[in-house]
Image: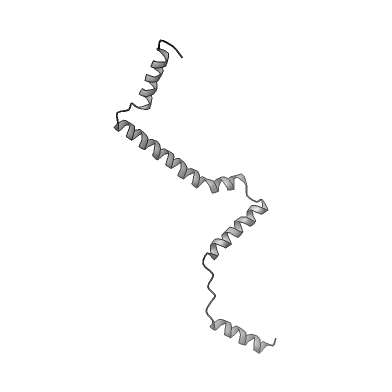
Length: 100
């Protein structure tokens, strides 16, 4: 190709709008990058643990909220607390006439 034709092609390309990527293109690119990194074996235990920590944190927060709600609802119904309940249970087992 000569210089004149090449410059004409560049001018025509500059006048056109830039191409728009398909919806979800960025997600496919990130998935491909992650898959390639996983195949390469470059991930260490710390990298995998760092990726899982947000999930662990949400799970721990859910368990804590559930336990607090259970304790609050049990105290609202007059059920003894954990310490009192275990003390009563131990007294009943240890001082029962039949033993274990």
